[in-house]
Image 1 (cartoon, rainbow, N blue to C red):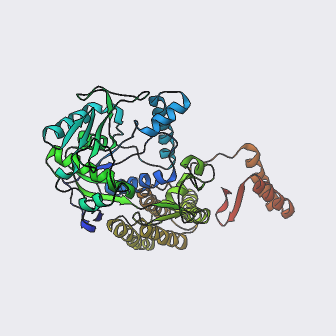
Image 2 (image 1 turned 90 degrees about the vertical axis):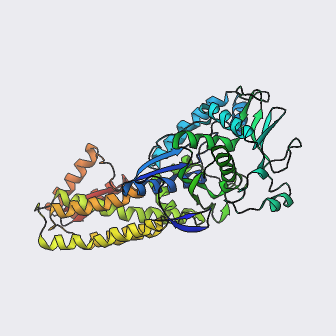
Image 3 (image 1 turned 45 degrees about the horizontal axis):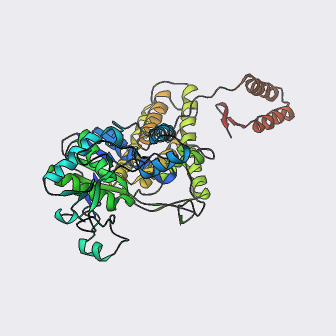
Length: 468
């Protein structure tokens, strides 16, 4: 299996720190509002990475935090006249609803920054003891130049950062020894939540939160650290500086970053009016369509969101779901149970679709090619099944399709929907009308059902229905 490592700018063979296990940390959202579709991309991408590792038999310890103390949270709380804790708890709950809608597996652990302050204080104290950090009037700064490898992830040179002016600087306070130094602890301001520390009341800087939470729940060294490419600098660069200076060990073996999401070929922003939350998208589309859309391009490529592309994703997803539905319908009506010799040979041919799927995923999780392999499999299913197929053969095809789709988090089996008595009666009446050659009434009932959002399909095996 090869993974593109941002650190080396190349694909590398994946060799876990511990055989059969993967320790993975993914930076989670800051919970001050509903998550937007930019947040959704890393959630979907790295959930799929995790699923593939699990499919290959790895034991995955997957940790993804919630940043529940932040300037944006405090601002929102002050606007509403409630506590920051109330805001963060509300939007963590809403975020989890959206994640469930996108079929994202619950993390092994979702640590909250506010519950790990003690560990952050300990790590900052260690950095001060080792000479990597210093305190000025209640603020603790990290000595960026003291860390020899600073810039190795973002491939930025310290001198270039210095000459680049304020735009590239991590923060800019007059009390700093060096303009490039960044904040580990900030003193309390009026109306803000704060915690006791050796440097007075205050709260941690953003970067130290992830360093501590990763260490506590995964250990000092991890296999994969992941997030959006906007986090490479300064967030992940600062995490490396903090963690490696404090622990004296390399932090993460592989750094994975997903590309940006644009809306109609423009950067998503509230000022452009093209800012969409996952909740808003769910009002127009099934979130399975959003997931399928996100996986239709390679995770490192920029991805453009548009109504046309979502429509195409919906159609693609429907092809797979329909193939699954057809298999289940044929299973229920199969005349024979056991596979024939010819079917055994046919099923053996489907190994190539599984192999192509795995080959795509092993090449830096190329989900676009993995989906193409599933489409090829669907075409095979549609061509090589009918009312004469055995139940065993149909079941094996269905299981293989469902297994491959599940790696991508795609649900191929829709929940069984109960038609209400009126619709059931209309279908029964239509069947009777057809038997009596009253085709005018049969067509009239079809139109009535279509108006209710029920599409009928007359097949050799009987009448099938689906929601429009």
